[in-house]
Length: 505
Image (cartoon, rainbow, N blue to C red; front, top):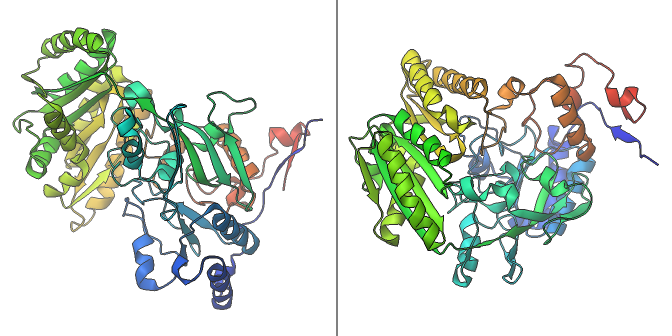
């Protein structure tokens, strides 16, 4: 018998935190679950949680809670469900799309104390961790066995696995090895009503729907992950890293397409333009030529014979695309320095601009040169500098729009320019996000890619997990619409209702 799909369509519940007495009683219940050390409620301390790394949006939560185990997470979420209190899961707060922006009159559930590596299973090449484990800790835990964890966001020294799962994070080596979803095999998750479920496991393929695949990248809208089973891979036999400098960033972009067209898939390919090069050199001293228009970092890995065979091909393509200088890292120390420069590009940008807005869009590799040219035209049109640093191999752009918040109207202009860049990405066959998620910031652009039916379908999935719309509300979906803001959208009978398989109310 096919079960009836019930899609809850309800008015936003009245939060108990809207009245002082309700807030006081709710706080007492949180203290009963977590004790005094697990609940933050003072105005001064709450400021530290009023945004993630996209600091342009700020909302101070009513409470921040710090659970230490799955049972406590379950009790907190059940309490929120019973009291109609919205909540937002939070990892290290390094997200750049406002995905961990607190909800009005809501609670932030920080997973920072759930930071244990629970199991290292080398024979099966698996590691089981809690969500607050820092990305780099996984590699550190298995490095002595000859293994590592491949997804490596630039913030990997601080970002957490739970946040990586929520955003389906990528990184410099995801061109060859895939993003987070390719390395998460199973999770334990607490549903919005407090029920604990497990999906997937250590095996690569399990029967039934791929619920784990659905949860990775769901941006915390379906529940809170409390345990994650990860796949680790062996360190390559050989690694060679080089950078090539160019007069024009378009030539660096053309080199990326040229290398892959020759059948070479590097572990990573990253591009930085002159603005980034100069700021990074001042901050890190990675050895990049500051007079170059751009540099392309290329890393080859694999068996020695394969790397040695591919290196001349890469160098030939680079020279064909007008490379000025090609420099191969002499040893592991210099290789680390090359990557240190790239991974510090965002923070180093503060040396040349007081404010910047990080955008995240994806385009087909073959469109790199064209899109970079269009970004340059937009920069001129708006009179704002745009620095480009990005995962060139998989077409994941990270343009940084530089502005001065002290100048009237300039923040708004930067915001508009960043949106125009996303329109260019979509018009080129790309996407509005690669690895930073949609979050609060880019929900306004979701309709560039999806029509009403697409959005309704995604909302049906969301509502099947979170019937009250309490879990990370106000993220991903354009508002006002559907289950979270009824009355703001004209009612139309859903095809699922019409077929008799579901009902909406």
